[in-house]
Amino acid sequence: MKRTAKIDRKTKETHIKISLNIDGSGKSKIIYPIPFLGHMFTLFSRHGLFDLQITAKGDIEVDIHHLVEDTGICLGEAFAKAMGKKKKIERYGHAIIPMDESLAEVRTAVDMSGRPHLTFKVKFEKELIYAMIGKETVRMYLSSQMLKEFFEAFVHKAGIALHIDLIRGQNTHHKIEAIFKSFGISLLRACQINPRKKGVPSTKGIL
Image (cartoon, rainbow, N blue to C red; front, side):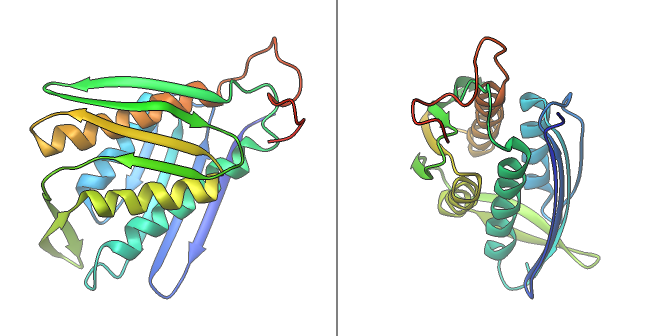
């Protein structure tokens, strides 16, 4: 059974389309008006071995908040839909990823439990990023709080518990990159099918 999903969500603030194949090879096609975040989603796809397509636009002339949060909502919905009843999955995933001087740990990272929870112990200086508004390139800033909004939206729609601890680092770009890589690898491990398992990995019989 293919574990795939397509999401098309349109509001007065954003329009986001996502195509996801959990059992992919890491191919991605990201059309995103904030190139830095588009790069992060590409890394997430590549290291998680998820085939991922994202096409997004939003009212970033107001703020990037709507687009970032709604992307988390849509990606979380895609994972929840693609995972289905979660039969024979590993359920848990964990990764510690260095990025030069930065070390990010997604600790006991993912539990596909059906119970949303986020612990986000991450701090960094605001990162200068650029966004495309029409044909104009505009300077903006990405904060750790804004990144938290993305993950908060993801876990609530995906129905997972996620812990992200940034252990150390100096370069903000490296910190964020390590987080997205470790997030992808942790999800990869949690989503993997274990043929030795029967049904859902829970004594309750449901996740």
